[in-house]
Length: 636
Image (cartoon, rainbow, N blue to C red; front, side, top):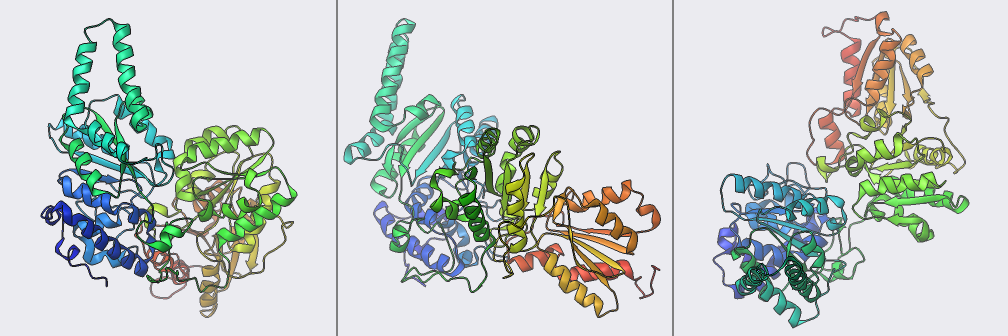
């Protein structure tokens, strides 16, 4: 444990206010040490939190949280905030079962007024809070901290456009830790930020507007433009002024001599309407391994604090993500029409592997999934083969584009859906629970789910050949099973499942990586004298109707298993059986799906225990259907 005597005195933001401004630098150093030590134990997001240590302290020092609402965009930059808001004693439970969430979470603390793990929601949410405050005739502050690429998303600008047209008082902090809109160039820039946020300048600005109002409209307009562009040239704020924000910046987000007076001026200003404070920070600041890393230690495994060396996975098998990246790159060597698209997640999706070989055919569009999908649709209209490589939960943000721009036009966009199913430490915000349901309902779509890494290769191969309609294939986070990978020429016939083993009484119809659990369950059932057929469905749409109907007619019990919500694969199978009168003949059917709850973070195995989708649950489900409670057979 690091030596942190000053931090040890801070239990909540009220304790923080007892410090002298001169002590804040020491507190920041100690808070940074505590953050590094904690994340070295838990793993998680590190670089973003290191970059906002001083900003976090300044905000809690000057504002009256939780009365003043402090909203962190994405939430992964909020670890220092958690330490300062009565959660330090649990900070080493981050991302563990029963522990603190890796993101902000309303049910976790009164200091988290809005839960977030996806980006670019903070300004919209904060504006809602500000309007509610105004309607209630309250006077608290509302502050949104947005950064780390989140300003690349259209939602942020939609919110700013709305906020700029209103008179609700809102403070937005742009935590600019990558590509600065207007880089700081020394003391003059800092001076201007202080000056332009102060009462004197704001009062003078108002005075100029009053004087200008006495003149004809043409002169008044020119005077307003002069004032706006003077500030824009001085501090880079023209864009935000156009959106209706009062721009203050840029300031050094690690310098309390700038942060404290500027934020105090903004806090105490009588200006009606939204502010944007532009703070320049350094992602990973204060920890040399992070500062020197390309990704600034954005997300890390457990690591050695002294060396920065991360604990490597002991698995000898490749991740599904790597298998995807390698396979797509092999196809691109042959087919010049293949394009890889991602939304700010090149390493998380394997697109970085593709990018190293084909940089001109790789497009990272930023946190802009809606644009990514329609961009891919445009490419498809010109005969290219775009692979829109997006996490399952992130693709949810672009559902209208999937429907309107891809499915209705029947365009051959290929959706590579990473993080399918339950994902572990990131919890429910990143769990791919709904993609089967929201894609398989769409006309023209082909929806596949890989049961292992070899099947993933076959599905990528198949997707390359699909040129007449959209398709999607889903695969989980983590490592494969170590099976031998096929060549890139091996494809799957559309809508055809495969029989893994044959039995006479039970049919387990599995979609996705629960297939291995089905095999374990079948072995347990065999010991009880029950023989089981296992089918790897491969396709949620189109279904292998012939094989499913045959299995329904030749087995006493048919159970579907999938890593998805209600309305997905099992629902489509049930509809097929109902429409063909199979239930009229006495078939016993059950559908095993994710439960109707959001499952908190834990190891994937424990999360699937909660979901009831591990081998023991599958065999138990079979026994419940196959036998009555007293052990007497109820099915012939």
